[in-house]
Image (tube, rainbow, N blue to C red):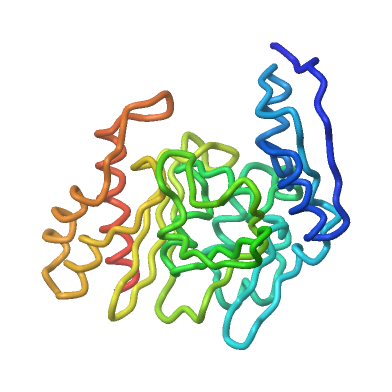
Length: 273
């Protein structure tokens, strides 16, 4: 096993504005939250960057609150904190389920919701949940604050609209009407990267999302439309083939992912009837 031995610079900011100034002054700086992905890369001899920004002193980004009817989850809220939050448990139970299946206790204590979004892996366990509930990503940069729907946030594999000088500060979710349903399929029941991960909301206008079946997390818009107009489950599953573009990789095959995706949509629709 290779280990990192190269030198790098670690910056630390006490305020959000100070953090943004570091990103502006040091182009290419990588923000660190729980560091559960970057540290692994460093341990294996990779060097994602030469400058890193420790965000852990920014306590304001760890809060989980309500702003009117909107659930506001700070980007530094950990998976453990999501599971324990009374607000999240009451309003977004499928996010609690997803957080409970991210790695083991150590990862859940360190990993953050904002980090899962920023890492931009299509296998991120929380991403289908956030996509299915039309979550909004709050970004803060030199020009101030802006909001981007999660469904518009990713531009490709591990790529997003976030600028290098911006930080994810929060994730906002409005009231969710309908029955929530979440499933993760991996090699093991836990501590495994998703082969397929699904989240859905059963309502008059159903909302469904899948991870690990395309370069980014995807909303199943064709499938949703078929279900909403009452076309039947078979028609919806046919529409599903146009929503996903799975590939063969080390964890699974495209055919397996297509089959599992169809099974999950079917199970979701039958169990939430």
